[in-house]
Image (cartoon, rainbow over all chains, first blue to last red; front, side, top):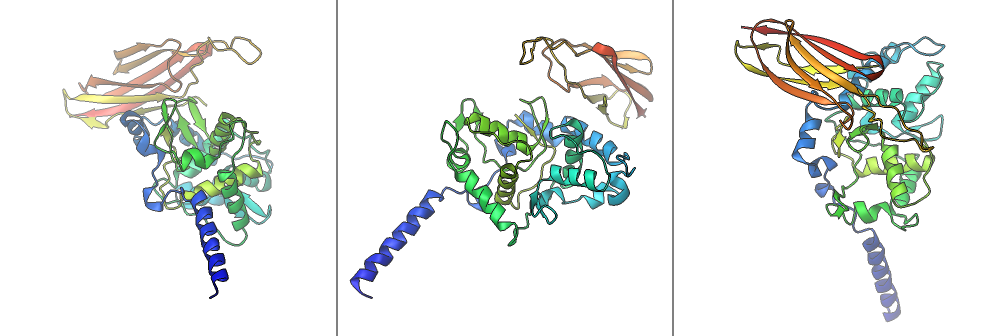
Length: 262
Length: 106
């Protein structure tokens, strides 16, 4: 090897190392922690017991909706899917999932609405409506305790990469990337609150600050408002891609739905 | 959909202190908030919660603005006899929810 190529390959290695450094802060798999671990003892107790977890009110509403006939087809979710406790087990842990009719990943809420419009011939439920939150909470509840397992193949890979890019892209008037707080500075405090690692393990979840149940996209939109970035609409492709990346980033972690967060 | 969830032991020994947890679905709108247009959002809260044990009132709470949404009320009572516990939440705008649970006392 000539000196020249030697120097060039050294420069290449250095460049690679630099590039790796820029994203080196990605949290190692073993050090990932759910926001649950950063909560107070009282809030954890509230989540742990169905008797005190206010999210269960939505789960019970969701169960009622699951069995109620809707739309021109006069069909209930249960008419096709049967008992959700069996048929929906582990489903939410694999969403967003690729939908071939849309040629892109869809979130659990979008999947529910696809079923509503396609099979039940009913109007789609509005994002953050009580009904959609209740149904998604009921479906996701069936995955409680199961590990998140997102299928990434050649079709979904570009969307995962788009989500990863969004997570690391500085944006908004504060010029912040998600990763700067949630990869580099988790565990420290932002004002009075502990910065979590941003693993979406418990959505839709009951936030005490919201005094109600909310979806992951509501949370993402909150964060984007916080950094004074332009906030995409509910269901926007950017948000679903980010959701996909976050779920993949939390792969193997256990679903807590309905979680409680401060 | 006004929903309430009550949790208590299905059976207890006579004289035993039992814990009862109740969770009521309610927005508990304080009456102090305003819309983005400056209009006052009218108060809509649960005013009173009562628990009767075989017809005898054993627990009562008056609620006021600035209580959290979906209030969790947990309390204890002494298991005296088998029978029914009735729980009632009464609030603004005709809000009434009643739940009944039974307990076996040996």
